[in-house]
Amino acid sequence: MAIEERGTRMLREFREFAMKGNVVDLAVGVIIGAAFGAIVTSLVGDVIMPIIGAATGGLDFSNYFTPLSSKVTAANLADAKKQGAVLAWGSFLTLTINFIIIAFVLFLVIRAMNKLKRKDEAEPAAPPKPSAEVELLTEIRDLLKKS
Figure (cartoon, rainbow, N blue to C red):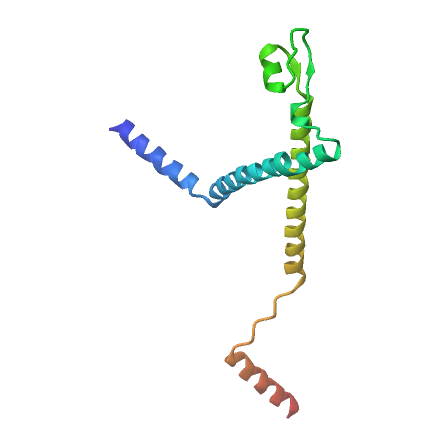
């Protein structure tokens, strides 16, 4: 019975922990981040790198490698990896460009959010309108001052 109660208590504590705002916000952020990463990966692989390749005469950076073994004779990276050790610097270059783009986009998003936050803080909220009782007391005070 004690084990069952402990298990129930742990489950209840875990549920309370998981339902806290920060944990849920973090989970949503991770999911959106993964989807955003896939979009940026496609942007780099399917849009930016082909443009760079066209500008450089049809080069495909993702397939560039340097063989580290004399056994490697293949012309493409996938076959070369099967033959032996290779330094896949083209893939590294593609991933580096991918990282730079993600970092730059995140910088722009955070910058825009900070700008909106500063704008909200700069505009002071209008003071609340005094209640009818306060207005009446103010009028009485002003009339007494005039007398």
